[in-house]
Image (cartoon, rainbow, N blue to C red):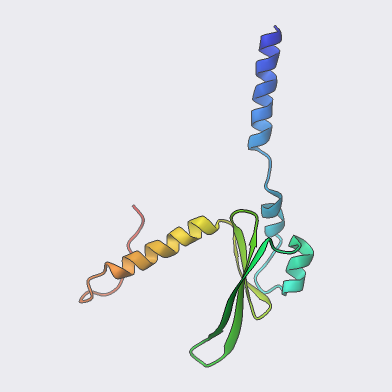
Length: 120
């Protein structure tokens, strides 16, 4: 009987661990595109790391300062001119998609119209 109770308690522990939510992700769902950076810090707190991507210029000649704010192991917020531009819940997966797009572009036959190849 004792062994049976131990197995049940172990099972409940595993289930509880499986369904715990990531507190960073929970907060990240509150961050929306267009928010100011001070609103982000009031929700998320200070980022674990800031990557200053520097100043960029668009085709119209407008300057934009870009930063990527990292939270936890795999989440980020892109800040452009002190405003949220993008929220990424899975940086690793996003990076893989970008690399796939770049690889697809490199592998195209230049004589044919460009298209992005789907993941297989």
